[in-house]
Length: 196
Image 1 (cartoon, rainbow, N blue to C red):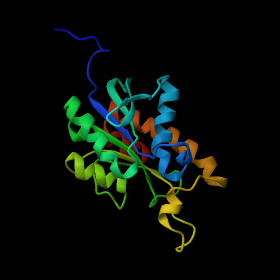
Image 2: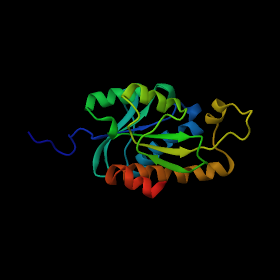
Image 3: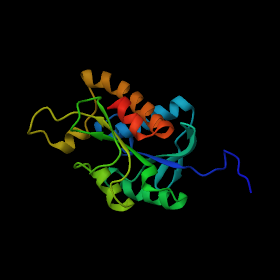
Image 4: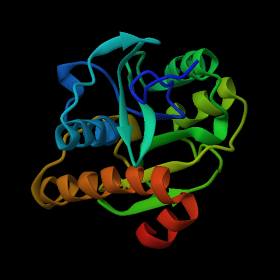
């Protein structure tokens, strides 16, 4: 039996990390969701189908069928959504691409990795724990360090971008969206060379 391109199951899952709800919009922790919205706007899809405890859309990106996911479980339980989708579509961990924030990188700097530890990030930690390890590609978007050491990290990552950061981050989000497409169409190695 032959399937049309439209009916074929996705070969990639892209998990954009963030927290659901209007109070978390445009916060540092939500640059993953911001990247998802950038891709959706660019290619004209709506990420609004509720599946796997996520807002989802199946579309073609970089020549491949992909499942775009914005988990609605809150950051610390993102692995639940990713695991459900992986199991349903029989997608290997190596084809699960995660887009996330990173406090260790300066605001707006991108880093593409083939694999790696959670680096203290609770969303990544949950995906590693529930999806079978660290061997999945990820795009990290720098959100910078708190301005002083007394600043609570939780308050920092849940703060909104302002000043110069608010000008930098939309550009970084667009670059991250392009990096997603590059990874799918040309591979992680190529994307690392282009964006790191």
